[in-house]
Image 1 (cartoon, rainbow, N blue to C red):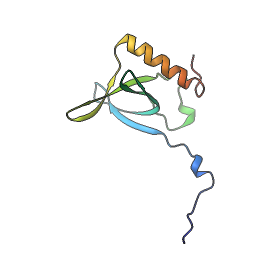
Image 2 (image 1 turned 90 degrees about the vertical axis):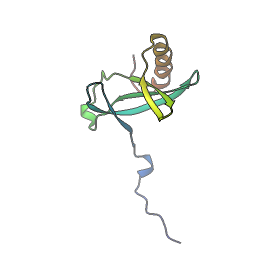
Image 3 (image 1 turned 180 degrees about the vertical axis):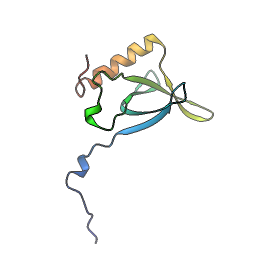
Length: 104
């Protein structure tokens, strides 16, 4: 029976959940998904613009909330534009993320 080779601490290594999206000007931007939740039958993602090096992290990075929809072509992402929904879902994410991130 062969033994598996394991790198010490490898199971604790952080692997970001990344997605590259195109903005309205055709520019590709990579985002990191930092949380997801379901609210009133809709799946939402909380994302921030991804930076590879810790020293490049912007302390004032904006949280973007996306809704996940589905149509005949499959799943799609949409920016939440409705102010009331944005406030509700934003408050839920804020509560969930406040232990891990400096939010305020």
